[in-house]
Image (cartoon, rainbow, N blue to C red):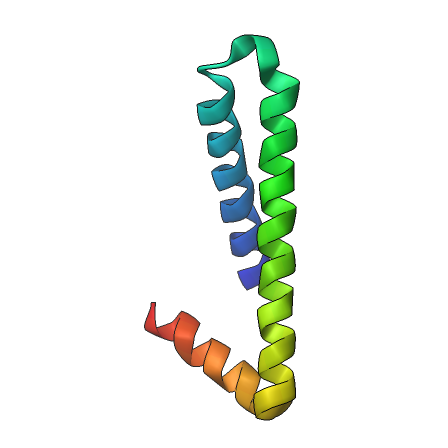
Length: 74
């Protein structure tokens, strides 16, 4: 259930971002979409890198505990 909510929210945010970026540049919609995809992949890669460093430093159990506390506190 939680994965469905997260995926739906991510899809809505991505669609809104595409609309906001493409709106001012209607002639360059492919470029705007490419920039959105590049940023999405870059943020994902940075997130994976941070989690990997956390796992090496804190072990898997404490990494997931820290992420659960972080997301639960938001």
